[in-house]
Image (spheres, protein in one colour):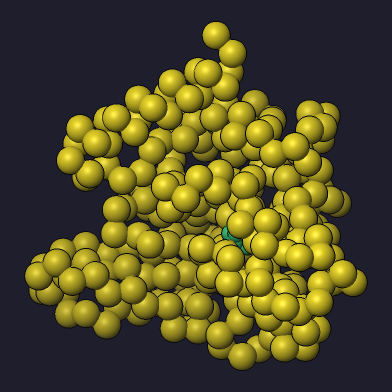
Length: 258
Ligand code: SF4
Ligand code: SF4
């Protein structure tokens, strides 16, 4: 049986399981070979000798300190204004009455603080967010001039010299991961710090995280940190029903997360 058929079979199994669980299991578990197989459905990513970059996020380890968002702003010269971020951290608070509160003041920079009294909290957790470097990226499909593209090593990038600032990609991204840079006047987003990873360095957010809540690596490196993270944890992606085949994988993702 070919890999794709195995993947489809597994996917169908998980979809069926989710249905049988009455919709309580909203996220399918992703395993390393599935992540690679999904990515190889993308015709631009066909050089198996290159790395295939992705990121793992361990929700249970994130303490909401916001150092990742701060480091990203500095490293990538993201405009100072508090509403421009390439990565940010959201604090989810599920109250005893079922209400879900999502807060991310200043993207979490400076540290997220709980605003709900302890006695009203059922559970609370942090969710770092960034571009998911989708294999089937709606932003790439929406760009009318080909300025948004997927690099051969699987990173969704914007060619600033081609971008005409039409914002179609920003509207198309279902994760709110893009913004119009008020300085450069072109679409902006996380690049996995492409200027760093192509020199063997980690993205800035990964380097500064004090709890190793972010794990960056090559999905093709079977002995690498990211594949180990995927093997050791039941990871999921955001909004799996959109089939964007994200390459940012979350451990401990709760059904409340949007
Ligand atoms: Fe594009 Fe948004 Fe997917 Fe990133 S998360 S690849 S910006 S659609
Ligand atoms: Fe969470 Fe790490 Fe970012 Fe701090 S630096 S908010 S622990 S992901």
